[in-house]
Length: 246
Length: 222
Image 1 (tube, rainbow over the protein chains, first blue to last red):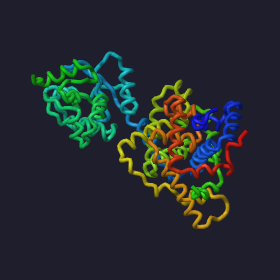
Image 2 (spheres, each protein chain N blue to C red):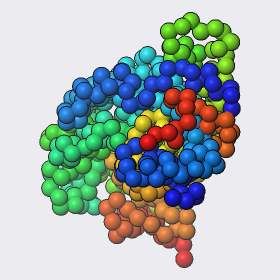
Image 3 (cartoon, each protein chain N blue to C red):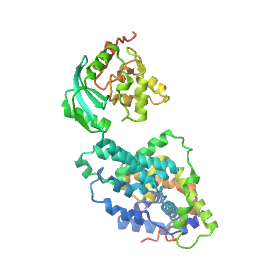
Image 4 (tube, rainbow over the protein chains, first blue to last red):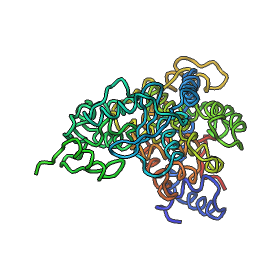
C-alpha cells in the first residue's frame, strides 16, 4: 500500500471491507507517521460531523405538513370537475366545469373520454365525472370564436399555482391576432428571467384558447411549439387574423 | 483545534442508533407507502429530513419550508404513482432525493450568503446532549462555539460535496444508499466524500485528528 492510497481508502476501510485490506492499512499506518496523522484527521472530521447535535424541528412542523396534506386530500374528495364534449369551429373540444365556471378545455386528440378524464384528474387534482353541457356553453363558445376574448367570470384557474395563474393572466393580455415572446410574458409578471418556466406553464395550460398560450412564441418570432401541435397553433393564429411580418 | 474538545467530550451518539429514529423505523418498515399511510410517514421522517435540510441550508426557516414542500411533493407523487411502483419504492432514499431537489431549487434562487449561523446552534440541544451533569455556563459557550465551527465549515463546502458529506457522516448512510439518493455512480460518491473530507480537514485544522470516539488513535484497529 502506498501513502497516496491512504486518503482514498480511509472511508472504505471504516465499514465492512476485506480483512486483508484492513490489515494492510494497519501495517502501513504503524510504519508511517505522516499517514497516521492524515488518517486521524479524516477520522476526526467524520467524528466532528457525527457529533453535531441532531437539530429539533419546530414542534408544529408535522402538524403544518399534515394540515397542508389534509387540504390536498379534501380537494381531491370535493367538488368534482364535470366533463363534457362539444363541437366548435376548431373541432371537438372537451370542456370541464367547476360549478358555473370552465376549468378545463382540451382538443379531442382521439384518446377517448377516459384518457381525457385521467389527464384532467392529474392536472387539476380533482375527481372528474361525466356530465351534460350547460345551456350557456354554446353561446359562450360562439361569442369566443367571434371575438377571441372570454369573460373572466366564466373561467376558473384557482387550482393552479400562483405562478401558473400569473403567467396565464399575463398571456391573456396579448390582443387577438398578435403574438408575444415567452420572455415578454415573464417580464409582464415581474420575473424577467423566468421565460423557460413560462414555457412550461404554457405547455400545461388547462384552458388553451381562453388563456391564449397560442399567442406566445419564441423571441425570434418562430411559433416554437404547441400543446396540440404546431399546425393547430398556426391555424388558431390565422383564424384570429395574425400575419407574420416578412 | 483544541477548542473542539468540549464538543467531543459529549456522549457520542451514532446517527444510526438515535432512539427516536430507530423506534419510528419499525412502524413504516414493510408497509407499502401510500397516501393513506402518509401521516405515519411524516411522523417518521420529519426529523431526519429537517436535519438534512438544515445542514444543507444552514437556516431553520428555510429547512422547515423545504421539509414542508418536500412532503407535499411526496404526497402528490404517491397519489399519482401506480400501485406496482409504490410496492417497489424505497421510501427513505426517495424522500431524501425529493428533499435534496427542493433544497437545490431553493438555494439556486437565493443568494449564497444567506446563512444564519446564529440560528443554527441551539443551546437547548447542546444541554440535552452534554450528558447528565449540569453544564457550567462557560462549557455551554465553548461547546456552542465548537458546534458553530463545524457547522460553518460544512456550509463552506460546495453543495454537491456538502450533500455527500452530510449523508455519509451526519445521516450515517452507506455509499450505495448515497449513490441512490444522489443518482450518481458509487465511485463519484466516494470521490465527493473524499474531497469533502479533504476540504474540512483544511478548514478545521490538523488538531481535528486528535479527536476520535475513543479519544485514541484509530489506526490501532486490527
